[in-house]
Length: 314
Image 1 (cartoon, rainbow, N blue to C red):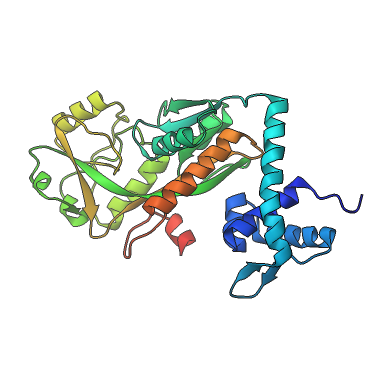
Image 2: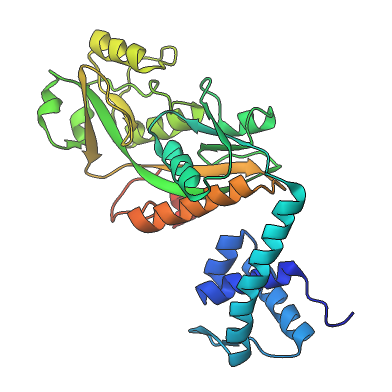
């Protein structure tokens, strides 16, 4: 029938009606802005009414758009509830959160709060492998890491530009500082191969940072994992360890932010192309909430980012 309207078109219109901004709505739906605009026009053609007034400066709802906006939410909620009733509870979702207390674990915690009926299983980084490798092997459905090199068959979104910090032995001279200037690490031989977040992607970023500021790293050694092993490493080597700001406490060490400039590590969430799952939807909502509430995607003036992320952001 010519008056039939696809649920997909209603869902896309509802996102634009919520955001009143095509780019933000497209980002929320993870589609191209051009495709979203085309689908909204297709819906208007199907219905024979104009739903949106568009100018170069703003998007607003017409009276017909206001009516459809409120009805669309009811229709979509009923449709989603019906599908859930027919299919039964959604299967669990396995998420690699890298390590306890880190940024990915905070996202999963928020997703669990927002979707209490959804079952998630957390996995912790099982070795210094890129997150995409865990997806390819089928160990997890969703992972976190860097997005500078990703294979075909996966999608990703930015989650956080997290400040890079330094773990110092309690008696280290720099431990007296509230924040450690990067140039102060010259001659200290900082380590970039320790911590649950460690991977070739992390090390690539950390070594870029040290090279940029003419800081020689600690000689290469096997990757150090686990709080007890990290505490031993810091105690025996007496060297600073580069880490992320969410690093949980380590006995015998203090965590200090790095400054002048503030270096950032770019976390992304990664999932297989075509994965449709309410748990993934809950993770996306959690990222939206956390980035909005805490400014996770804000980049302070003068901050440092690794390449190619810095060039992409510019």
